[in-house]
Amino acid sequence: MNANTSVNSSDTVTVSSGRPAEPHRPPRKRYVFLMSAPALLGLFMFMVLPFLMALGMSFTDQRLLSPNATEWVGLRNYDRLLSISWLVQEPVADAAGNLKHTADGERVYPRLRSVLRKDSEYKDFKAFTHWSFGDKRVVLLAKDPSFIQSIINTLLFVILVVPIQCGTALGLALLINQKLRGIFLFRTVFFSPVVTSIVVVSIVWSFLYHKDLGLFNHYLNAMSFGLIGPVDWLGDPDWAMPSIVLMSAWQAAGVQMLIFLAGLQGISGDLYEAAELDGAGLWGKFVNVTLPGLKNTTIFVVISTTIQAFGLFTQVDVMTRGGPQGSTSTVMYHAVTKGFREQDIAYGSAISVIFFLAILAIALLQKRFFDKQEGA
Image 1 (tube, one colour):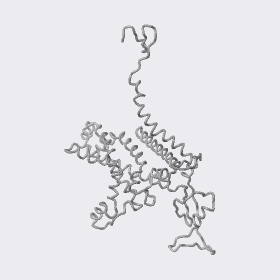
Image 2 (image 1 turned 180 degrees about the vertical axis):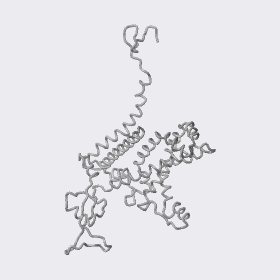
Image 3 (image 1 turned 60 degrees about the vertical axis):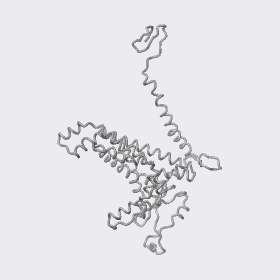
Image 4 (image 1 turned 45 degrees about the horizontal axis):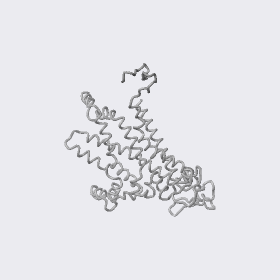
């Protein structure tokens, strides 16, 4: 500091000429905005701005290629997306009051398409599913049944893949955390699927899942001594989604494995020594030391894996194209199909907006749940 300056009690530098100098500020605070500006700019350009554009577009009838001018349609896309209703049908009876049956012994009901066309209340609705209630048949209707099916498929994928992927990652992290010779080789092997393109992995696994030539069916047949026949993994609606779940959990578990490994190496060895002195075995140390030490890591892994799982698209697009019978069509795949392949970009934007809000709500609920668990 120069001899002609002084510092008063309020940290204000006063120059000998009488003009107050700028208050002293730590350089770290001064450059916080500049340091975070690139990240904030990227966040705005690639997340906030596209979301606002999608939100505005969802209120129009914009198409990718159309000679017609874009018009404001209000909530029409959301009405098409979210409208659900139901219809109760009485069985058909003859003049004597006896119920009619098909050749298979099933009750005959009025033709659904004719019923929907006659009643203006059910305009634009289509059948999603139905079930019997006594003699009556209850039909669940939706203006976009494929979207409802995509929501169910997406939730099923998330419910299956999150525990499998996180559990596999934790197991691998515990395995490679051991001080064994050549452990770096195993770390590389377990992480290698992550750095491989998901498109390449999907193509390779499509061959492995092949009904006639796939290795899985050959191994299954050999291990069961021919008792289990070939399974149509990607062609059977009951097996298609579990097959994608298995492949996705294997491909992405390496990332969570590294995060869990970092969490494991942050746990003090003194805690394990204290547990051993108290007579704790391997399971006791895992429950009383490892799991509590990985609490914050587990919260991060579960939330990030859940958000990632909701975005399932590439595996479905490469392996099944949403089939068979829509059993693997997810919300993201449905949005891309409507928005780009069918060129209905306004409706695809409405799907994206609803999907984004749903993921945000689920992530916040998960965070609130874990916060309560931590505070309990």
